[in-house]
Amino acid sequence: MRSQGRPFLNCRMPINNISHHKFALHCFFKNKSRKVSSMLGLMMKTPLTVTSILRHASTYHGETEIVSRTVEGPMHRTSYAEVWKRSQKLANALKRFGLARGDRVATLAWNTWRHVELYYGVSGSGFVCHTINPRLFKEQIAYIIKHAADKILFADLTFLPILESLAPQLKKLKAVVIMTDADHMPKSAVLPKLLCYEELIDEENDEFKWPDLDENLACSLCYTSGTTGEPKGALYSHRSSVLHAMGIAVPDVFNLTSASVVCPIVPMFHVNAWGIPYVAPMVGAKLVLPGPKLDGASLHQLMSDEGVTFTAGVPTVWLALLDWLDVEKKTILTLKRVAIGGSAAPLVMLQRFAARGITVLHAWGMTETSPIAIAGSLLGRHEKLSESEKLALRSKQGRPLFGVEFLVVNDDGVPIKNDGVAFGALYVRGPWVAASYFKSKDKSAFARKGWFHTGDVVNVDADGFFKIVDRTKDVIKSGGEWISSIELENIAQAHPAIKEAAVVSKPHEKWDERPVLVAILKPNATFTKNEMVAHYKGKIANWSIPDDVIIVEQLPHTATGKLLKTEIRKMVIGKI
Ligand code: AMP
Image (cartoon, rainbow, N blue to C red; front, side, top):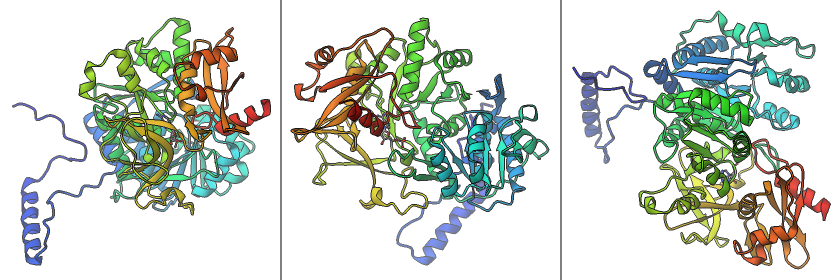
């Protein structure tokens, strides 16, 4: 007999066809007797929970590997079946703490298999997995722990100094668990009651009766990096997380299958690593996790050794990897596709990957949008374009994913023309877009009913490709005209002398604001103001060429790898 193949996610076998048929008839007559004016569908209301993702992976991709570079040092190999069992051990261990449904369990951790176990063990138990970004300032971490009212904190060894510095704030927690084994447990005079993850779950049963959860219950919590004001929490539901994972799996987005080898460089402590810990088990892809080592040499070794085909991360990580590959004259032979988002990927970055046979998928998203909402796959009709035309198109952020809707309006609130020139404020809505912030009175971003105001300015071309012009607060307003700092940065980035570039405004008496380029140069390179002007000439209108260039050793970044424009503006003002 021929095999019928594998079941889809959420379709649990065996299906009792007879009882389903009876149920359908029952509903039909019940509806008829009530004289309902509309006919309800007769499909099962199986809740979309993240637990179903790992159950599916364990059942149908049980032997597929999860490979991690450990915080302790060596590589670690496990499988979906094993992680499913260990998530259940963890869930049993969590029961001992007497948490209530919806309580927050925090993590301060790298991308490793233990963090995956926490994603599923915590959310599947009906608690909320609150991932904390360790790159935030200590005060922000303290604020977030308090605001979320975390009950337990799981942390990697690396973050012991942060934990110790936060000792007074951790007093209210029921436990602080170090994600390591007994041999590596640290001794801390400041935090004498630390628990050990492996000891915590060791004796537990590897079968857990997962509670039946409503798909709309909260599943995980992530705070924005909050460059202005306090960080704000996006509280994802089981339903939103599953739908987002389904939305990003498809060919025009991440294009993942059970044959893919997926390596999220984007951290699991920021917007759930763009959904990769959900979508990889959903499709049965091998998962390769970089742990704490994100330098070029480590990434090259990890991806080459494990045959990674798809990876995802912010431009700063790729800049470091590409520079390392150039110097070492190496490439990653198996790597086919790199998703880049979080900040604009400059064209030159797409060209550098293309030269190695690697396609860049530019993607746009926000903490509030789970995050992926736009992705830059080309349309069928773009096949006939030249390679450079294709790259130029790919350097736009791309087209909306199915499920997510956008509205772009000008200053008068009127929708802009999709001509690739007119620009406006970007609003978004959809099943994986935040409807409000967690425990926050700040409703300003939700003022337009049913929409979330992104704070980004975009243009849209006739093919529906969105291009992020700027953040509203970073756009440079010069003599009544708008100058895109992102566009000026991308052009600067293509100059051979420049390693990294930022463009910010400086106040100007006549024009209100003028652009200034702040750049880090490549080793032994020089770059003068005249060279800058010559480089920009012909590429943009003369009046938008920066007034000046300031060379610096370092550029400040936010906790999520974006240029920290507030600080760069201060640097510029200090130097003019
Ligand atoms: P966060 O919530 O920290 O992930 O930041 C979201 C913001 O990052 C967006 O509102 C954009 O301003 C920016 N962003 C994300 N992806 C891109 C992209 N591909 N190009 C340009 N900006 C981006």
